[in-house]
Image 1 (cartoon, rainbow, N blue to C red):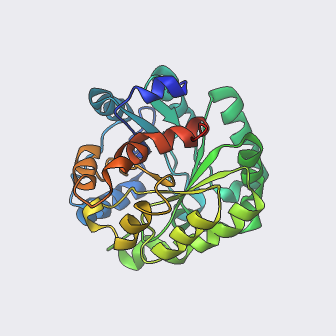
Image 2 (cartoon, rainbow, N blue to C red):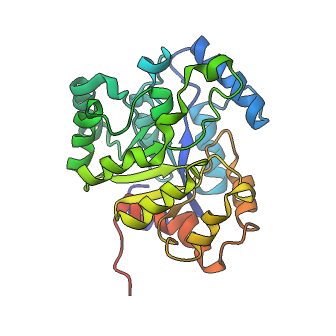
Length: 296
């Protein structure tokens, strides 16, 4: 998706797609334990698609995808999939794919240097943070060096919010602290870094109303609806989408945990007004990724 015009020809844009199997390194054994628990929670196979398999899946459906890994090396000890691998795949499939990077905030200024390099040399177009898995408060100054780079370039950053399917059912929840997924913790980031487009990932349960308040209050805050089937959305999601926040919601599946076909089918039956279908499935993502067009 090199241009807005190219992306607009696609059927939809999924802003939340995970890379879970690297082509250049073996699966981390700790990651394998998390995958098994997540498979039981979501009711999906333990085997995960490779990056090329995922791209082929989306190309067949002519759905654009934003792909990323999660760098959680400090919080879990899991070796991350290289950001460069995802960025190179996006470069080879630029008609349908955009790469976001993930850098553990505990890497501080070193992480900020990596972020700048990935933007300038690899064409990375945004970043992904998962505070519960990365074990950090998103408002902690430890992350500010990386945020400063993102803000400088005016790029989007996706923050996991709400309950985490990862770690669910594992002893101690896999060591994951759910409190770091509270959306209001990201509010300080939205204030301090207004050039950063912040996407609160998932319906944010059990703090859904916090996310809705932030999206209503802050021009730079958006919500992606990944990780849940729309038929299970808290009712206020549909109510606010049909009201004041129709331009703030984004289609995201959380693939491979939820297939986009299944998500879209449930979305069409969830009570969203028909005129919001194209904005949520595609147009709002176009504005986020390429800049908003003038509205009449």
